[in-house]
Length: 364
Image 1 (cartoon, rainbow, N blue to C red):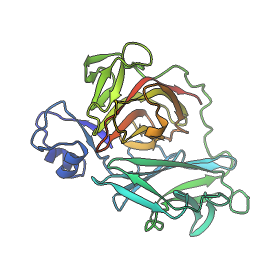
Image 2: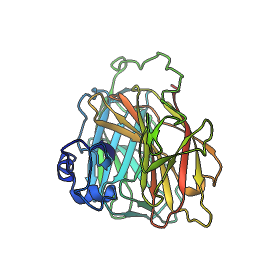
Image 3: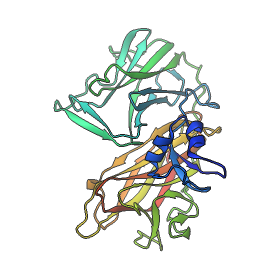
């Protein structure tokens, strides 16, 4: 999903055509009851424009996407070319791009798999040697909700030997029932010694690249100056400073808080933030909070995604807790990084979540 700011002359019909979706889906994503009632400056959640390799991405990174029964699969590798001794960093994302809830059922604890193929012959499989619980389970994806998985291939085959230089297909599967045979794939190249440019050795800057990390600057109670938000409000229940951002001003609706910053390919960033649940007396907590990183190239096209998810059980009631995650190696073509907090307020929810003191620091 992305955020679009309505311009003068826009209609939901024009916006839907621009993003390859429908008026009905835009209305559902944004809780719009009257499709004719939008205004300039309004921020709408819109689907990403589907595509293959984004313009401007260099030949060292790969990107592939495919839609399968309402799920958008995205597969990214951090490089296109690798030499013996290097590792292939693989990211696989599945997103619900419909306006309905999708329930995925699994026969074991395994949720995905990734394989490497040489021609039609399988040379490596991520799940080989791993143990999964044999109890079945489900995953529920609300409209716009995603899951991201990562894997690393050390360029060795099933016998433990390095593969010979050649092209290899990386294929990712969602192993849910009735979807096991559906996949998205990309191609990487393994080359001989000296044929891959060495990675950058320049030290990365250690300062916080988030602007207004304490979310102190507000135009009014619902509009931050530096951050972008939907269904949020300013609160004095801060971790530090005077203010923080409360997601879920309307507790049973979607809320977002986001900011874009410059980022570099082949780097790893650490994201830290403080969060607490704002519990109302006698209230019910029926929401999900997602902290995600979205990556874009210079042309503004989507490159990849990282998204740890946090559930109500992990967010303490009326007291702050510290959270931290890393992005993994950002793929080639990365120019901007968007940090986004998404609050999925569901029917019957009464509580909200407060975010404060956010940092993003390059660690490698």
